Length: 415
Image (cartoon, rainbow, N blue to C red; front, side, top):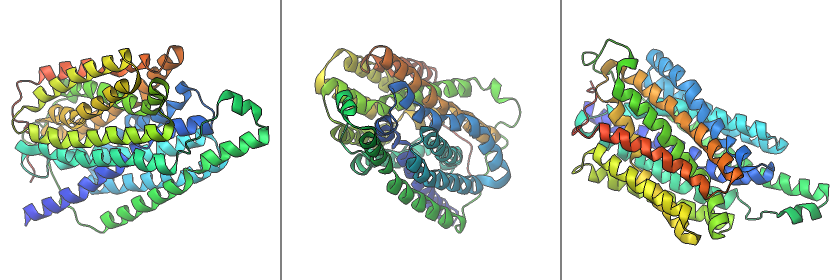
Protein backbone atom coordinates (compact mmCIF):
# COMPACT_ATOMS: atom_id res chain seq x y z
CA UNK A 1 0.00 0.00 0.00
CA UNK A 2 2.82 2.38 0.90
CA UNK A 3 4.58 1.61 -2.39
CA UNK A 4 1.40 2.27 -4.39
CA UNK A 5 0.95 5.63 -2.67
CA UNK A 6 4.55 6.53 -3.44
CA UNK A 7 4.15 5.56 -7.10
CA UNK A 8 1.00 7.66 -7.45
CA UNK A 9 2.67 10.59 -5.70
CA UNK A 10 5.69 10.23 -7.98
CA UNK A 11 3.46 10.36 -11.08
CA UNK A 12 1.61 13.42 -9.78
CA UNK A 13 4.75 15.30 -8.80
CA UNK A 14 6.41 14.44 -12.11
CA UNK A 15 3.67 16.42 -13.89
CA UNK A 16 4.92 19.53 -12.07
CA UNK A 17 8.31 19.16 -13.75
CA UNK A 18 6.49 19.57 -17.07
CA UNK A 19 4.71 22.72 -15.89
CA UNK A 20 7.75 24.68 -14.76
CA UNK A 21 9.75 23.45 -17.72
CA UNK A 22 7.12 24.87 -20.05
CA UNK A 23 7.07 28.23 -18.27
CA UNK A 24 10.85 28.71 -18.16
CA UNK A 25 11.32 27.62 -21.76
CA UNK A 26 8.93 30.28 -23.01
CA UNK A 27 11.63 32.82 -22.07
CA UNK A 28 13.68 32.19 -25.25
CA UNK A 29 10.51 33.09 -27.17
CA UNK A 30 9.72 36.11 -25.00
CA UNK A 31 13.23 37.55 -25.35
CA UNK A 32 13.11 38.21 -29.13
CA UNK A 33 9.37 38.89 -28.95
CA UNK A 34 9.50 41.58 -26.25
CA UNK A 35 12.72 42.91 -27.78
CA UNK A 36 10.53 43.89 -30.74
CA UNK A 37 7.36 44.84 -28.89
CA UNK A 38 9.17 46.98 -26.29
CA UNK A 39 12.08 48.07 -28.54
CA UNK A 40 14.93 46.71 -26.41
CA UNK A 41 18.67 46.10 -26.77
CA UNK A 42 20.17 42.62 -26.23
CA UNK A 43 21.23 43.62 -22.72
CA UNK A 44 17.76 44.94 -21.86
CA UNK A 45 16.02 41.85 -23.23
CA UNK A 46 18.24 39.65 -21.03
CA UNK A 47 16.45 41.05 -17.97
CA UNK A 48 13.58 38.74 -18.88
CA UNK A 49 15.76 35.91 -17.61
CA UNK A 50 16.94 38.04 -14.68
CA UNK A 51 13.35 38.69 -13.56
CA UNK A 52 12.69 34.96 -13.62
CA UNK A 53 15.81 33.65 -11.95
CA UNK A 54 16.24 36.34 -9.30
CA UNK A 55 13.04 34.96 -7.77
CA UNK A 56 14.84 31.69 -7.06
CA UNK A 57 17.52 33.53 -5.11
CA UNK A 58 15.09 35.65 -3.10
CA UNK A 59 12.47 33.01 -2.32
CA UNK A 60 14.27 29.65 -2.10
CA UNK A 61 14.99 29.92 1.65
CA UNK A 62 11.49 31.28 2.48
CA UNK A 63 10.10 28.39 0.43
CA UNK A 64 12.14 25.90 2.45
CA UNK A 65 10.96 27.43 5.72
CA UNK A 66 7.35 27.43 4.48
CA UNK A 67 7.61 23.70 3.76
CA UNK A 68 9.06 23.00 7.18
CA UNK A 69 5.83 24.36 8.61
CA UNK A 70 3.26 23.29 6.00
CA UNK A 71 4.95 20.35 4.28
CA UNK A 72 5.75 19.60 0.66
CA UNK A 73 2.10 19.68 -0.40
CA UNK A 74 1.56 23.17 1.03
CA UNK A 75 4.62 24.46 -0.79
CA UNK A 76 3.49 22.95 -4.07
CA UNK A 77 -0.01 24.40 -3.89
CA UNK A 78 1.28 27.89 -3.03
CA UNK A 79 3.72 27.61 -5.91
CA UNK A 80 0.94 26.75 -8.34
CA UNK A 81 -1.20 29.66 -7.15
CA UNK A 82 1.65 32.14 -7.66
CA UNK A 83 2.38 30.60 -11.06
CA UNK A 84 -1.25 31.09 -12.16
CA UNK A 85 -1.37 34.67 -10.83
CA UNK A 86 1.74 35.64 -12.79
CA UNK A 87 0.36 34.11 -15.98
CA UNK A 88 -2.85 36.14 -15.65
CA UNK A 89 -0.79 39.33 -15.20
CA UNK A 90 0.48 38.99 -18.76
CA UNK A 91 -2.89 40.25 -20.02
CA UNK A 92 -2.67 43.76 -18.48
CA UNK A 93 1.09 43.87 -19.13
CA UNK A 94 0.47 43.36 -22.85
CA UNK A 95 -2.41 45.85 -22.84
CA UNK A 96 -0.13 48.59 -21.48
CA UNK A 97 3.00 47.37 -23.36
CA UNK A 98 4.96 48.18 -20.24
CA UNK A 99 8.24 46.23 -20.07
CA UNK A 100 8.45 46.67 -16.30
CA UNK A 101 4.97 45.15 -15.95
CA UNK A 102 6.06 42.17 -18.04
CA UNK A 103 9.11 41.70 -15.82
CA UNK A 104 6.90 41.82 -12.71
CA UNK A 105 4.58 39.15 -14.16
CA UNK A 106 7.57 36.96 -15.00
CA UNK A 107 8.91 37.45 -11.46
CA UNK A 108 5.59 36.30 -9.95
CA UNK A 109 5.53 33.22 -12.18
CA UNK A 110 9.10 32.39 -11.19
CA UNK A 111 8.25 32.89 -7.51
CA UNK A 112 5.73 30.11 -7.91
CA UNK A 113 8.26 27.96 -9.76
CA UNK A 114 10.70 28.44 -6.86
CA UNK A 115 8.23 26.83 -4.47
CA UNK A 116 7.55 24.02 -6.94
CA UNK A 117 11.22 23.23 -7.51
CA UNK A 118 12.19 23.54 -3.85
CA UNK A 119 9.47 21.00 -3.03
CA UNK A 120 9.45 18.67 -6.01
CA UNK A 121 13.17 18.00 -6.51
CA UNK A 122 13.90 16.61 -3.02
CA UNK A 123 10.42 15.04 -2.82
CA UNK A 124 11.16 12.90 -5.86
CA UNK A 125 14.56 11.82 -4.49
CA UNK A 126 12.96 10.33 -1.37
CA UNK A 127 9.94 8.70 -3.05
CA UNK A 128 11.60 5.31 -3.38
CA UNK A 129 14.93 3.53 -3.03
CA UNK A 130 17.83 5.86 -2.15
CA UNK A 131 20.16 3.94 -4.48
CA UNK A 132 18.05 4.93 -7.52
CA UNK A 133 17.34 8.52 -6.46
CA UNK A 134 19.48 10.08 -9.20
CA UNK A 135 17.86 7.91 -11.88
CA UNK A 136 14.41 8.80 -10.49
CA UNK A 137 15.16 12.52 -10.50
CA UNK A 138 16.56 12.34 -14.03
CA UNK A 139 13.41 10.51 -15.15
CA UNK A 140 11.15 13.17 -13.60
CA UNK A 141 13.32 15.90 -15.10
CA UNK A 142 12.81 14.22 -18.50
CA UNK A 143 9.27 15.60 -18.49
CA UNK A 144 10.82 18.99 -17.87
CA UNK A 145 12.69 18.22 -21.08
CA UNK A 146 9.44 17.36 -22.88
CA UNK A 147 8.08 20.76 -21.87
CA UNK A 148 11.30 22.40 -23.04
CA UNK A 149 10.71 20.87 -26.47
CA UNK A 150 7.04 21.91 -26.67
CA UNK A 151 7.37 25.45 -25.27
CA UNK A 152 9.32 27.04 -28.16
CA UNK A 153 7.28 25.02 -30.67
CA UNK A 154 3.98 26.32 -29.28
CA UNK A 155 5.34 29.75 -28.37
CA UNK A 156 6.96 30.18 -31.77
CA UNK A 157 3.67 29.33 -33.47
CA UNK A 158 1.27 31.43 -31.38
CA UNK A 159 3.45 34.26 -30.03
CA UNK A 160 6.08 35.09 -32.66
CA UNK A 161 4.71 36.88 -35.72
CA UNK A 162 7.72 36.18 -37.93
CA UNK A 163 7.84 39.86 -38.89
CA UNK A 164 10.79 41.93 -37.70
CA UNK A 165 11.06 45.51 -38.91
CA UNK A 166 14.37 46.86 -40.10
CA UNK A 167 15.51 50.29 -38.93
CA UNK A 168 14.57 51.71 -42.34
CA UNK A 169 11.06 50.21 -42.16
CA UNK A 170 10.51 51.67 -38.70
CA UNK A 171 11.60 55.12 -39.86
CA UNK A 172 9.25 54.91 -42.86
CA UNK A 173 6.24 54.34 -40.59
CA UNK A 174 4.21 57.06 -38.97
CA UNK A 175 4.12 57.04 -35.16
CA UNK A 176 0.53 55.72 -35.30
CA UNK A 177 1.48 52.85 -37.63
CA UNK A 178 4.49 51.91 -35.54
CA UNK A 179 2.45 52.02 -32.34
CA UNK A 180 -0.21 49.80 -33.91
CA UNK A 181 2.44 47.30 -35.00
CA UNK A 182 4.04 47.23 -31.53
CA UNK A 183 0.67 46.84 -29.78
CA UNK A 184 -0.22 43.96 -32.09
CA UNK A 185 3.10 42.26 -31.29
CA UNK A 186 2.59 42.68 -27.54
CA UNK A 187 -1.01 41.40 -27.57
CA UNK A 188 -0.06 37.98 -28.98
CA UNK A 189 1.01 36.80 -25.50
CA UNK A 190 -2.36 37.44 -23.88
CA UNK A 191 -4.37 34.36 -24.87
CA UNK A 192 -1.52 31.83 -24.47
CA UNK A 193 -0.78 33.00 -20.92
CA UNK A 194 -4.45 33.09 -19.94
CA UNK A 195 -4.66 29.43 -21.02
CA UNK A 196 -1.53 28.60 -19.03
CA UNK A 197 -3.00 30.32 -15.96
CA UNK A 198 -6.26 28.36 -16.18
CA UNK A 199 -4.45 25.03 -16.56
CA UNK A 200 -2.12 25.69 -13.61
CA UNK A 201 -4.99 26.85 -11.39
CA UNK A 202 -6.93 23.69 -12.25
CA UNK A 203 -3.97 21.50 -11.26
CA UNK A 204 -3.66 23.38 -7.96
CA UNK A 205 -7.28 22.53 -7.18
CA UNK A 206 -6.74 18.85 -8.01
CA UNK A 207 -3.64 18.66 -5.81
CA UNK A 208 -5.43 20.43 -2.96
CA UNK A 209 -8.02 17.62 -2.97
CA UNK A 210 -5.42 14.83 -3.29
CA UNK A 211 -3.73 13.12 -0.33
CA UNK A 212 0.04 12.91 -0.72
CA UNK A 213 2.28 10.77 1.54
CA UNK A 214 4.21 12.73 4.13
CA UNK A 215 7.93 12.15 3.56
CA UNK A 216 10.36 12.64 6.42
CA UNK A 217 14.11 12.65 5.94
CA UNK A 218 16.35 10.43 8.04
CA UNK A 219 17.13 12.50 11.12
CA UNK A 220 19.90 10.14 12.30
CA UNK A 221 22.17 10.47 9.25
CA UNK A 222 23.12 14.11 9.83
CA UNK A 223 21.21 16.20 12.29
CA UNK A 224 23.73 18.65 13.65
CA UNK A 225 26.07 21.27 12.29
CA UNK A 226 25.87 24.12 9.86
CA UNK A 227 25.33 23.63 6.15
CA UNK A 228 28.42 25.80 5.69
CA UNK A 229 30.46 22.77 6.83
CA UNK A 230 29.08 20.67 3.96
CA UNK A 231 31.85 21.33 1.45
CA UNK A 232 30.42 19.15 -1.29
CA UNK A 233 27.04 20.86 -0.96
CA UNK A 234 28.65 24.30 -1.25
CA UNK A 235 30.65 23.22 -4.30
CA UNK A 236 27.38 21.85 -5.71
CA UNK A 237 25.69 25.20 -5.14
CA UNK A 238 28.51 26.91 -7.04
CA UNK A 239 28.34 24.34 -9.86
CA UNK A 240 24.57 24.72 -10.10
CA UNK A 241 24.96 28.52 -10.22
CA UNK A 242 27.26 28.22 -13.23
CA UNK A 243 25.23 25.44 -14.84
CA UNK A 244 21.91 27.30 -14.78
CA UNK A 245 23.68 30.41 -16.04
CA UNK A 246 25.09 28.39 -18.95
CA UNK A 247 21.79 26.68 -19.73
CA UNK A 248 19.84 29.92 -19.81
CA UNK A 249 22.50 31.65 -21.94
CA UNK A 250 22.56 28.83 -24.49
CA UNK A 251 18.78 28.70 -24.92
CA UNK A 252 17.79 32.33 -24.48
CA UNK A 253 20.03 33.71 -27.21
CA UNK A 254 19.57 30.77 -29.58
CA UNK A 255 17.07 32.56 -31.84
CA UNK A 256 19.24 35.68 -32.03
CA UNK A 257 22.30 33.50 -32.70
CA UNK A 258 20.51 31.62 -35.49
CA UNK A 259 19.36 34.87 -37.12
CA UNK A 260 22.77 36.54 -37.01
CA UNK A 261 25.10 33.59 -37.71
CA UNK A 262 23.02 31.44 -40.08
CA UNK A 263 20.41 33.88 -41.43
CA UNK A 264 17.49 31.83 -40.07
CA UNK A 265 14.33 33.94 -39.53
CA UNK A 266 12.75 33.95 -36.07
CA UNK A 267 9.89 31.48 -36.60
CA UNK A 268 12.19 28.93 -38.23
CA UNK A 269 14.78 29.56 -35.52
CA UNK A 270 12.09 28.82 -32.89
CA UNK A 271 11.49 25.46 -34.55
CA UNK A 272 15.24 24.78 -34.56
CA UNK A 273 15.23 25.60 -30.84
CA UNK A 274 12.34 23.21 -30.33
CA UNK A 275 14.38 20.51 -32.05
CA UNK A 276 17.36 21.34 -29.85
CA UNK A 277 15.22 20.98 -26.75
CA UNK A 278 13.82 17.71 -28.08
CA UNK A 279 17.45 16.60 -28.04
CA UNK A 280 17.62 17.88 -24.44
CA UNK A 281 14.64 15.68 -23.55
CA UNK A 282 16.06 12.61 -25.32
CA UNK A 283 19.36 13.27 -23.59
CA UNK A 284 17.62 13.00 -20.21
CA UNK A 285 16.27 9.53 -21.00
CA UNK A 286 19.57 8.36 -22.50
CA UNK A 287 21.50 9.81 -19.56
CA UNK A 288 19.21 8.04 -17.08
CA UNK A 289 19.91 4.74 -18.87
CA UNK A 290 23.67 5.37 -19.06
CA UNK A 291 23.81 5.93 -15.30
CA UNK A 292 23.09 2.25 -14.85
CA UNK A 293 26.57 1.49 -16.15
CA UNK A 294 28.47 4.80 -15.77
CA UNK A 295 28.73 6.72 -12.52
CA UNK A 296 26.76 10.02 -12.55
CA UNK A 297 29.87 12.11 -11.80
CA UNK A 298 31.89 10.51 -14.62
CA UNK A 299 29.06 11.15 -17.09
CA UNK A 300 28.84 14.74 -15.85
CA UNK A 301 32.57 15.25 -16.41
CA UNK A 302 32.48 13.86 -19.97
CA UNK A 303 29.42 15.93 -20.91
CA UNK A 304 31.06 19.09 -19.53
CA UNK A 305 34.13 18.64 -21.75
CA UNK A 306 31.98 17.94 -24.81
CA UNK A 307 29.96 21.11 -24.21
CA UNK A 308 33.08 23.25 -23.95
CA UNK A 309 34.33 21.86 -27.27
CA UNK A 310 30.95 22.33 -28.99
CA UNK A 311 30.67 25.95 -27.84
CA UNK A 312 34.16 26.70 -29.14
CA UNK A 313 33.05 25.26 -32.49
CA UNK A 314 29.94 27.47 -32.42
CA UNK A 315 32.14 30.53 -31.93
CA UNK A 316 34.73 29.78 -34.62
CA UNK A 317 32.49 28.36 -37.37
CA UNK A 318 29.74 29.92 -39.49
CA UNK A 319 26.28 29.10 -40.84
CA UNK A 320 24.11 26.17 -39.82
CA UNK A 321 27.08 24.14 -38.59
CA UNK A 322 27.48 26.65 -35.76
CA UNK A 323 23.76 26.32 -34.98
CA UNK A 324 24.04 22.52 -34.94
CA UNK A 325 26.91 22.84 -32.46
CA UNK A 326 24.59 24.71 -30.09
CA UNK A 327 21.94 22.03 -30.60
CA UNK A 328 24.55 19.48 -29.52
CA UNK A 329 25.17 21.47 -26.34
CA UNK A 330 21.48 21.17 -25.46
CA UNK A 331 21.75 17.37 -25.63
CA UNK A 332 24.78 17.21 -23.35
CA UNK A 333 23.31 19.67 -20.82
CA UNK A 334 20.39 17.31 -20.29
CA UNK A 335 21.59 15.41 -17.22
CA UNK A 336 23.44 18.24 -15.53
CA UNK A 337 20.90 19.91 -13.26
CA UNK A 338 19.49 16.76 -11.61
CA UNK A 339 22.92 15.12 -11.40
CA UNK A 340 24.53 18.15 -9.70
CA UNK A 341 21.50 18.37 -7.43
CA UNK A 342 21.65 14.72 -6.36
CA UNK A 343 25.42 14.69 -5.86
CA UNK A 344 25.24 17.87 -3.79
CA UNK A 345 22.51 16.78 -1.34
CA UNK A 346 23.69 13.20 -0.81
CA UNK A 347 23.68 12.21 2.83
CA UNK A 348 22.31 15.47 4.24
CA UNK A 349 19.57 13.69 6.20
CA UNK A 350 17.47 16.17 8.17
CA UNK A 351 19.22 19.03 6.41
CA UNK A 352 17.96 17.97 2.96
CA UNK A 353 15.32 20.70 2.74
CA UNK A 354 17.78 23.42 3.70
CA UNK A 355 20.36 22.04 1.31
CA UNK A 356 17.75 21.93 -1.41
CA UNK A 357 16.91 25.56 -0.72
CA UNK A 358 20.53 26.56 -1.24
CA UNK A 359 20.67 24.66 -4.52
CA UNK A 360 17.47 26.32 -5.70
CA UNK A 361 18.92 29.70 -4.71
CA UNK A 362 21.86 28.97 -6.99
CA UNK A 363 19.46 29.08 -9.93
CA UNK A 364 20.05 32.85 -9.71
CA UNK A 365 22.90 32.11 -12.10
CA UNK A 366 20.19 32.30 -14.75
CA UNK A 367 19.68 35.94 -13.79
CA UNK A 368 23.37 36.86 -13.86
CA UNK A 369 25.01 35.23 -16.85
CA UNK A 370 22.47 36.20 -19.58
CA UNK A 371 23.02 39.87 -18.69
CA UNK A 372 26.78 39.35 -18.95
CA UNK A 373 26.26 37.56 -22.25
CA UNK A 374 23.98 40.33 -23.54
CA UNK A 375 26.61 42.93 -22.65
CA UNK A 376 29.29 40.91 -24.47
CA UNK A 377 26.96 40.63 -27.47
CA UNK A 378 26.28 44.38 -27.53
CA UNK A 379 30.02 45.09 -27.21
CA UNK A 380 31.11 42.56 -29.85
CA UNK A 381 28.65 40.09 -31.39
CA UNK A 382 26.29 37.31 -30.37
CA UNK A 383 28.69 34.62 -31.60
CA UNK A 384 31.58 35.72 -29.39
CA UNK A 385 29.14 35.97 -26.48
CA UNK A 386 28.77 32.18 -26.48
CA UNK A 387 32.18 31.97 -24.81
CA UNK A 388 30.34 32.96 -21.62
CA UNK A 389 28.51 29.61 -21.20
CA UNK A 390 31.67 27.78 -22.35
CA UNK A 391 33.50 29.21 -19.34
CA UNK A 392 30.67 28.08 -17.04
CA UNK A 393 31.11 24.42 -17.97
CA UNK A 394 34.69 24.49 -16.68
CA UNK A 395 33.38 24.87 -13.11
CA UNK A 396 30.92 22.01 -13.62
CA UNK A 397 33.76 19.80 -14.86
CA UNK A 398 35.75 20.36 -11.67
CA UNK A 399 32.68 19.62 -9.50
CA UNK A 400 32.29 16.34 -11.38
CA UNK A 401 35.95 15.48 -10.79
CA UNK A 402 35.52 16.01 -7.05
CA UNK A 403 32.67 13.48 -7.00
CA UNK A 404 34.24 10.77 -9.18
CA UNK A 405 34.64 8.45 -6.20
CA UNK A 406 30.87 8.43 -5.62
CA UNK A 407 29.52 5.19 -7.09
CA UNK A 408 26.05 4.94 -5.59
CA UNK A 409 24.36 8.14 -4.57
CA UNK A 410 22.68 7.60 -1.23
CA UNK A 411 20.16 10.06 0.07
CA UNK A 412 18.00 9.96 3.16
CA UNK A 413 15.59 7.05 3.20
CA UNK A 414 11.85 7.56 2.73
CA UNK A 415 9.67 6.49 5.63
